[in-house]
Length: 155
Length: 155
Length: 155
Length: 155
Image 1: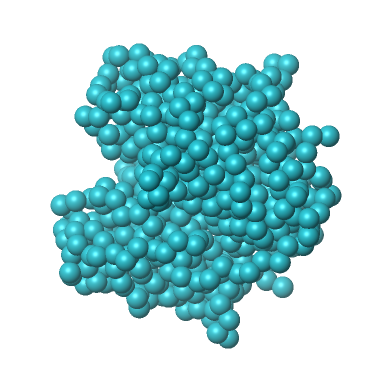
Image 2: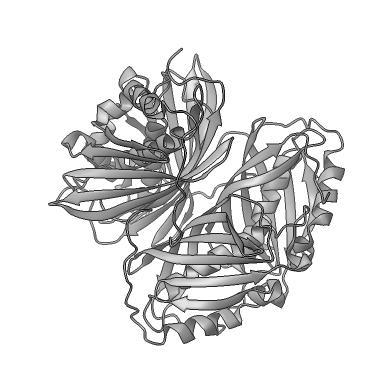
């Protein structure tokens, strides 16, 4: 949309380490081959190289996998803005699939729209990249809940 | 809700074979270990046994994986009602995560709410089962588009 | 779906008065002519008689008005289960319009799916009734937040 | 998000007249007092001055009314891009309410994200304006269906 996204100030200077550590603990992300190259305040990117194991019946990347990386990118975007010692969970999301996920890799960009104390509203866009041509293949709108005083990770 | 779901008459007597064949072609379903034990007119179940490879950072099954099986169960429920020679694609879905997917297995039940010619509206519920105790862990509402004259599968 | 909805025990014995009082304060509900004939634990109905002032360009009741009563019915369903001295607000909802709202009146039925302490997940269905024939014209899935210690009404 | 929205070329040079004519026929828009000052290819604004008749129990503009103008702004944005002799209908939308609609007026901005032939995906943002201070109070993601060969209006 036409208004500028705000510049976000993270409450936890260690936000990037926290997000990378959580991502590293998500075995499902490793299973599909997802990578986390961009972690900035209120903005996270997940990249996903194509492999046959993540496809659907037409040979494109599965819409459910597109949803997984959109959900995670936006959830981690929220996570960059919460205080230390806080974990986040996805309350809900709504995903529109716009085009087949037909590319050598996907890029999911998650961004925070509104960082509330308890609830954070986020958006994500997923692009399929083929020969450096970017096609928008999904858009998502999401609600994230911050669980204060509850650290990420297996306890 | 309180009203009864309609009894659906499939347009294609071979609907079950068609759905099983499409599911078999989805490598992403094999990757996560999903099974398709129930295919009835307007109603499909996907089951997913727990394995560490599909977990998130707290050791529960990843919300994105929950979304994958909800999306697929409801999409295939739509697929049981479309004519032969028709494929379906997910236009969009909205998923609420209600509880951690903490169980020995998940059951995703997809059902058709309204079977239009071009668009089919569906719902899904996902349960986590631990020692035969069922916990509702996700609900989904979805829009499916029927692509008439376009067969499922890689061409 | 096929599982039974739970029987809900209201935490506030005065829940019905509280809901009726809040509804009475919503001038927008009076503007469109909405009525609140059913207020039960976890289940609320809003009825809306047809009038030309609430129609869209084809002469049916406006989809936005359908959304208003679906949102309100489900939000008040949540409200029946929160403690006294608590107000609720809509975090988000997702509405599918299934058929034109073509009837002498609409009935929106809201029900609680999961009553959490902070977040309550609800669903609604809207029917158009013409000569006692009920047509399902919308389904909604919604997230409600309980604001504890914050009374309803203008302060 | 960070990518630029495309520049849209309307298929019908009379798109603006068509949209204004349809809006004029929506009695529900007149009832709440909505105005349509901006109609551009792929972008429409609906403005709504505050009046007590459209408020909820806290004295702010009703969330359902916010949904009405978001739905309409994005639906008309889609309508600017469809061919002559085509009407549009809302398949579904998902609305997040971010802040109370507390202002002297609301501005709903609808924009097309992806203009398909049958389905158009759109977004809307709603701002509450108080003493020229703009507060983002809702974001919406929507699916619109184009009905080719079906004129707008009461027939």
